[in-house]
Image (cartoon, rainbow over all chains, first blue to last red; front, side):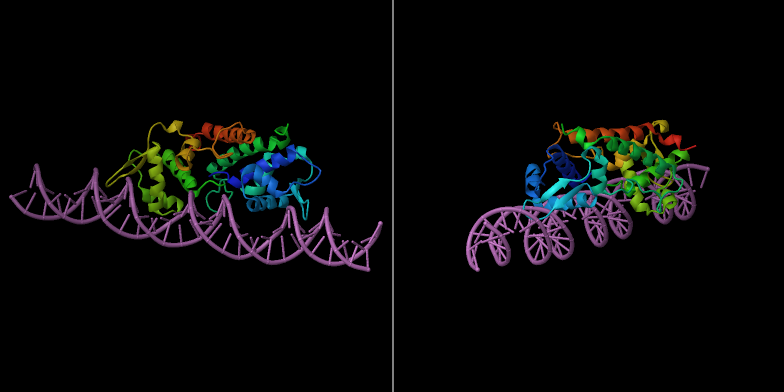
Length: 127
Length: 127
DNA sequence: GAGGGGATACTCGGATAGGACGTGTCCGAGTTTGATTGG
DNA sequence: CCAATCAAACTCGGACACGTCCTATCCGAGTATCCCCTC
């Protein structure tokens, strides 16, 4: 039960893209160099962010990645959901949502954390 | 990033032990039968709960497991920590606790969930 | 000077490999209870 | 009737097998930009 390193990389990459938001896209090599990760691995992570609609990619020379949409709306939860998936942290009693009291407690605890992550926008840290 | 099934089994087992708290300990076979798990596997989970000081075991015939200490004080977080460990869900920037803003946000989000799990006692569900 | 053809820089996707971890089983050892048996 | 012995029930711990996911790398393919060369 831990957040994957990929989520960590994704958060740092997104924060960097938002903080120094340029007109031209940023190459994966530059992003990878900042965090000491291999560019090929980081590109896999960025592909997930693209599929989630958080960033857009530009092919070819001078290509790279750029934040898509409004930067002010991107929250921690958006990025985490893009990498970890949106399924619940706790799966109970086989099939799913019965009236299991344990399940209800775990679900509300998870929602408490998600509310915190949803209310914190990345742009708040990019001052 | 998911809670393990073992945590699920542990929570259900503890709730059962607290709800029907008998004078004599409950055997692992009876506990395993309730949840459809193999007794040998459940005994591994119970060993972790014993080491955490939440239950105590009695060897020999008519042996089994019993809740240790005050039943009113056992929270969800106690059981989760016993199985998942107490390490943080998020490990940032290599070594550890620098002044990484992302790390701070993730930590406070995690604490929001843990507060919820700490305040919910198992005995509240065992009516 | 204008247009076309490479070289270059970059992303995209699949295949692959190693390692860690969760899940589950099996077996031998130690321990307590209770019944059985012999004096 | 008492006590010693034996069998049964049960937990404990380690070893082991299996699958899955994370992490990371490599390679080929596609694509856009820029430079150079030719007409």
